[in-house]
Amino acid sequence: MKLNGPIEVTWSHGEPFPHPHGVGFKCFYCFKKVKGGGVTRLKEHLAGATGNVADCPNVPAYIKDLMSSELVKGKVKRKKVVRFISLLKRRLWQQT
Image (cartoon, rainbow, N blue to C red; front, side, top):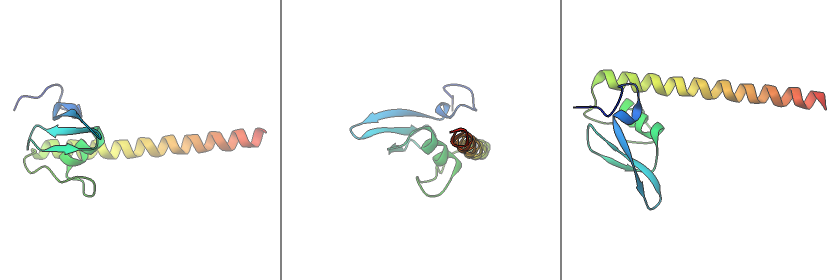
């Protein structure tokens, strides 16, 4: 299978498509179209993360591992941002 870009870029493994209620994606490995969800939902599909979307049965193991680590990185990054914002709010509150 030929990718549309670098292996690390999630959209190299699927493509977004519009539908009447928002956006969705099409997986290049199983050709499944999922209505609703963007890049994170595609990562979950490729990683086999449970909950929001069905696992891709045809994704290679190394891509599955790569997408799993990308999901973890995203969660860590979001936690850092939330902590930083709450710290800023506390400091601003103390100054007033």
